[in-house]
Length: 448
Ligand code: HEC
Ligand code: HEC
Image 1 (cartoon, rainbow, N blue to C red):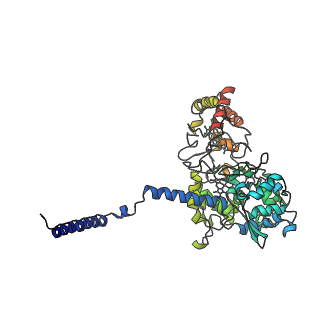
Image 2: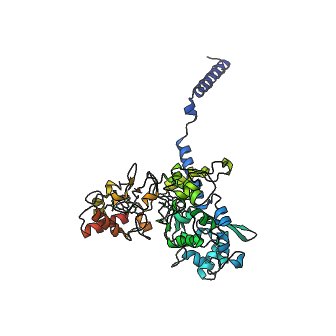
Image 3: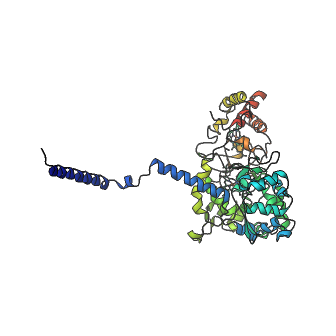
């Protein structure tokens, strides 16, 4: 029989050698092994990125209030003379008419009930200020000091979000946020035109105040001209959705670059946030005279990292948009049998799939075409570096039927689009086949 002491000693040695062995294993972990992220770490990172990106998309002005408030003095026009600003002010009714949206979730129940009961004055600019204080105007942030609206800034959500109109039966414009949807009601030009001081734009474009305002008021709802400040031409495009872009190589109607390229572009050059931007293609003084003269191709090279309010947010902002999938159409909004026949035509007789490759509905790869290849004029294409049009991803078409189709809305309906292709490519589609194709387009994203 072993003595208890001996057993203890043996057990002790056993434990010690086990510990040594374990230590040896840990010691031998490779640097790569030590840096390994667990599946949970990766998922957690994705979740955090999406949350941060969503926050940026919805609420971040990137410091652009220095432009919209400070320079254009839009805050003064919104407030109106009665509230320390200038002019008549902007009432909620007018704001809704301009296509601005109200985030129903940001409004406390008491105010909701008052609005429903009709006891809130929607024709009083002071009510607009109250909504801004609640941070309830989608894509617009008001800055207040002692109750006075001292500045105003804008966000991505201004143009790329709308609401579901669920708040008051029969009243559009108030409801839950729908991120990534193109706001085709929004009259960006009229909103900018509302600003009392456009001298900075006049100077940039070399136009008189009257000319600048003429350009802005010519756009109409759902449109904006992102190239105006590059080339001084006036040829606005429709606001596209910012969802359904994962897997899509080049973004924008004319394929300027990736989603993140364009995010940096817009945050700096359109929204006038404070950041760095680099795109030497803008130094071409023939194609982009305004951009070249103002150094937009290398923006704020001396900005210190601490003062850059855009670059640190680009990664998560990108991540968020890629996570926004195109929403499926409501049941009953299309004829399912016709759509099925349309699906076969899309990749068959109508040859749509040769460019709109399913399920991305754009080419995997360099997804650009000359104007001649799709049978349209090259005006807008020529305002972009590659002088081409990007094959539009088609998922979620049903969310933006207002304003028409193609970059400038030249085709009022999907049938007009199909008719165009039928003629241009000599497809010989019958009326029924055209209808089937349209039903298929309305059904995208086709989830089965
Ligand atoms: C004033 C309205 C407006 C604002 C604000 C705005 N955009 Fe856009 N966005 C547009 C328009 C118009 C286009 C199309 C431009 C073009 O093709 O020339 C566009 C294009 C895009 C695209 C390309 C979509 C596609 O189909 O490839 C993305 C992505 C996008 N915007 C994201 C953003 C983000 C993120 C922000 C905030 C940093 C933002 N936008 C701010 C109007 C706006
Ligand atoms: C040669 C490549 C090519 C082919 C083939 C093609 N398309 Fe397109 N499609 C494009 C391009 C490029 C655009 C963008 C045009 C623009 O921006 O003005 C586009 C735009 C569209 C749009 C507008 C989307 C929007 O958001 O406004 C629809 C709808 C569409 N195509 C459907 C079809 C259908 C249906 C077919 C088959 C009958 C087809 N396409 C065949 C390249 C193609």
